[in-house]
Image (cartoon, rainbow, N blue to C red; front, side):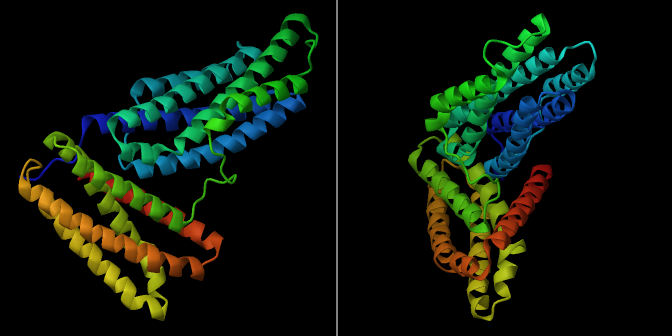
Length: 346
């Protein structure tokens, strides 16, 4: 009997991640609408920075979802809420202050939705923590945006109620809230290099660390149910990862004469792993044979990882400039995403 690869908890987190992405998309749309509506240059400048950050964070979210390894659609209720919010923002019935209030509320919702993924991952498995770790930066940048929006709301509210400026000017108020947000959350996040792009080397190595974590989780549990859950994720991750490598950066390395035999060896190693994965799906997680095959697969994967990281990826890094490596990283992720979609349908 072939083992099922789905797990209810992991599927629920996948839906939550889809919700986070939908909220991020909505935030960008609202910010673009407000950028058109606002006349204050300080506010427009701040919105421009929000949009730039949120567009970068959308790429981060897409990478997180691919690394997580399970795709889902956002909840119907959230899709409906997004449509209603867009219509409300287009309405002339709301003042500018009220429209910015909607964005501030959305930023809070974004933060809490993303933070919930982080906390759920801690409960379900270390491999999930590994995959969603970059989401923490997105979460706390949304929190910082929320603090700055409070300053904008204060100034807009005073203007609408009195026709005058508040005691503290907008720019000073913005700087105060930005500093406060940095003080509260700056130590909790790791600021990136200003780009959501990663080299193929970075992405492949991150995949390897997640796979190592899954093997460890399988080994450390005595529960057949947990073994099945962890193996289901391992199967999906290894299958998509291997096929994406064979379609993207392996052919690039094959073009170098001194690497052909080494790449052929990598293909053979992955073929061996695919056979073991297929056999494991037919075994009961409670059987001794299952754990024997897991150990065989782990040994084979460890050898393959050493081969890739100590030889193939080193060659790739020395042969391509950073822009080429980042482009190849995007191709690898896009290919892996398509493969995940295909696996989900089958």
